[in-house]
Image 1: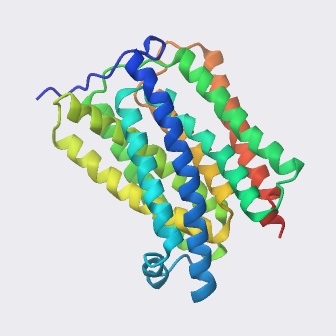
Image 2 (image 1 turned 120 degrees about the horizontal axis):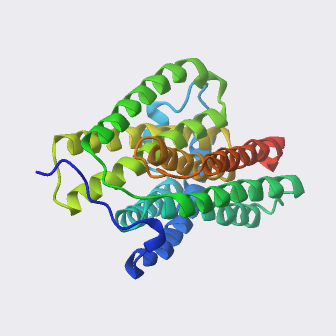
Length: 304
């Protein structure tokens, strides 16, 4: 088997079929938004019945979620979102379609405000648009200077090693931070893990499509499963200690930044880009993350 993975054309040479993946990703973002809303309601109702835990959701709480209609419906919607995302990243460049999940933040905030009757307020709305503006700038720079190139086995191994380090740090930090019920901790942790999931899923699916499946790809699948499971647990805890709007804001900001960051640093997807592009990445990322912190501060749920 060939050790290297052949990936589609560069970003600026999208084929019509690859361009079709953009609306697919956008529909997936809508399902992501609605799924987050229903899962959040499910978690809150289970905790209202069983009580909140000081160190994350217990096994009893997790099992109770399986009997929550809202949570199950949200999970089905998130499953649909994942399927659409996998389709889009399989046939289109990751740096183009992955950040489109930011659309979910707009849908989530609108849906949440309508369903609760509680307006976001000027500062919270400004925070939302700060998130979206930062992600949009990040995507623009990535689309201008991003290049897809064959991914070698060594690069994939590097990503897996970094993921193993991240998982170790997550487990250690969880024991220290979980008792504080910090929503941002869970959101950022889940966003980082999901960034690795998106990258490894992209590589794995393309290796399968191109017939280059090998033992490293098998380890990548294991990495996807483990990171997805830990990330999903973090997301449920985030619903317990924060609003669905904040969860989606964090995930749609941190996830693409991590995924594209891996592509730039490890997979050489920005090889040959000027220094200004690197500075632009940092500025855009800082703007988007600032928006998340502002939303955490000014969201109506946080103020209450």
